[in-house]
Length: 77
Image 1 (cartoon, rainbow, N blue to C red):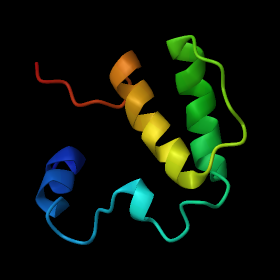
Image 2 (tube, rainbow, N blue to C red):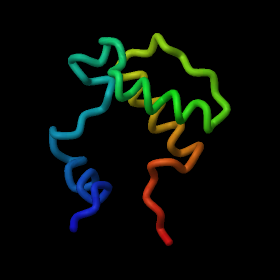
Image 3 (cartoon, helix red, strand yellow):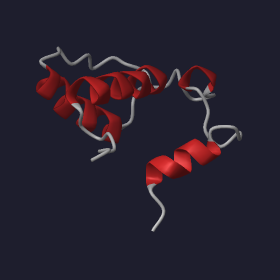
């Protein structure tokens, strides 16, 4: 079975994966799924949750908090 993270690396050079700053809908409010996940990540990271983030801002913060907490990152064990 293909690993999702491997697939992201494969798609990085294509137009399938875009930088959040380039999203046409990036300035819209974050999605419900982003809000839910950020609530969890923010709590685990000891960060204050900002409910007024855009989709693009939420995506970047999710990446940042995943690295801070280790949640959602592939284990290399």
